[in-house]
Image 1 (cartoon, helix red, strand yellow):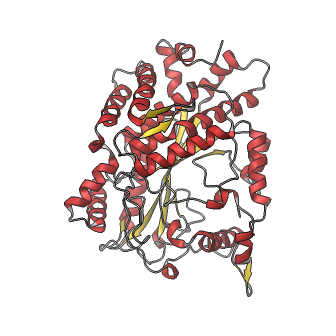
Image 2 (cartoon, one colour):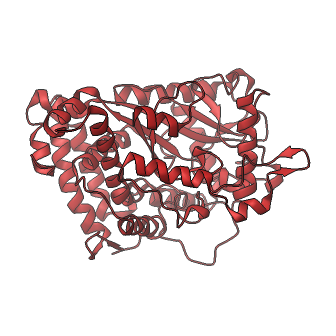
Image 3 (tube, one colour):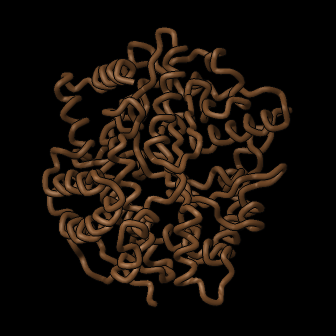
Length: 467
């Protein structure tokens, strides 16, 4: 059999086979700053009631002491993951005294750079490493960029669906080789079509003046400044593209970034006096500094890094890092968005598995930036990877035809039509820009007299009530 969309989909025809499309494990990580009732970054310490941030399995801090990170357990049911996400949010909200969780990806009102508190950790070896790493991030990129928050969607295919695919397509390969190939193919297609998620779920069209002075260029049509050149990124990774064709090639590329000296970072120094201010002066201090929009993960054993774990045992799951915080849902993402992500990741599985050259990755980056900065512009033109230009709307409609087909199969095992309904609702947004989260945010700020902080705090209060 060929790896063909229609042939693959037909493999899952019938109630019993269609159930395999729901076979997987899901987890969510959500970053969020604590803020005061005025919309200012809270400068208090991480709440003591939430225990040691190195020990708590579900609640820690991200870059800043003010920046809570909520981590669900992995579940074989997306609804259970969402319930767990809301439950952890409620646990956090209960201990906050006169503080709220900021509901958007772009930061609240920030103090001066030097007053943004870096996360504090205990004096253990791991705690010290995390502190030095964060000091290095502050030195390299500035603290304000680190205050941008997002949501990570962690996903693994279940053993049943992987075995089924291996049975049909795994000839002359080991199960591990086949599994790695599947995840890398999904990642390649995710990178090619990620612009659609930026369009549909982008929710950072504006930012507060304390983050960055007014820009010279007009950005009225932005969808996600968080994932744009004005948001979260590492400019020194440009020109050092990580490839996604094989695990060995990927690991080689990441190792090169981890071991290659960066002249700009070297000028900053590794030590200042007796204090270590960076882990090293390489392009990446650590694997966590790889700001890609999809990363491969494996469970770590003692003293392992992700690179060594991936090399030993292959890919266990992938981490999608492109999603903005949804201010209209108390958990930062809606269950409908999670349903859509299930469908979208299967679309990435069913699409062409062919390796992609560097030129395609560069085109995907250009589509990414175009939608992030100008996605709400009428008739925005994108590159379709076949040397043709196409409008965002026309391309989205073509993709939705396939998404709808997948959704119909996914709904077969149950009586409801939740996946088809989600596709129908998101399809309506393609031609009606006013329904986009980015448009709703702009409209909400407009109703607040143009006050970004007022809009954010109104959402923060409502989200706390509605948990």
